[in-house]
Length: 157
Image 1 (cartoon, rainbow, N blue to C red):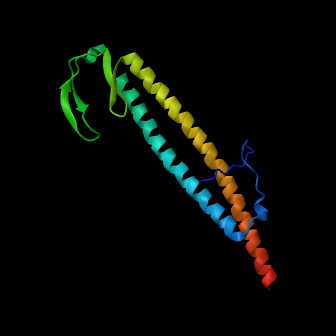
Image 2: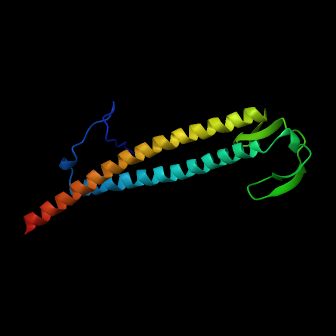
Image 3: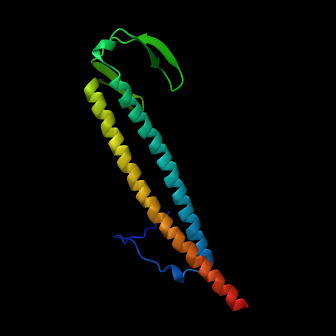
């Protein structure tokens, strides 16, 4: 898929939208719509990941030396929990993705989740900026297509 951008970038050529015919403009609009949908899906996925990292960080706040020996529910899956007792309040095992787990001290785990939240937030901001840029281009394409259709109708009258 060709990349479309409002800003000039190395290795990309600029196209005057007014030189395109109506069918080409509608194809371009369709491509932009697909890209915008992909951005929305990506943002939704990132938002879920951000929430999971934030929840994990917040859960770590509840682990204190005083909570040792207390009964807890241990998540086996997203919807299945088993009862357990908190044995070591200094170390936790965290999921770092693709079924890899690491043992960290509580402060190290909090730092890990804070860094992940920050990274995901930065990625979301980049995608939002790109989405805004694509949306502006889409609006310009629609405007020019409408103008060409109006011109065509005027010529036929």
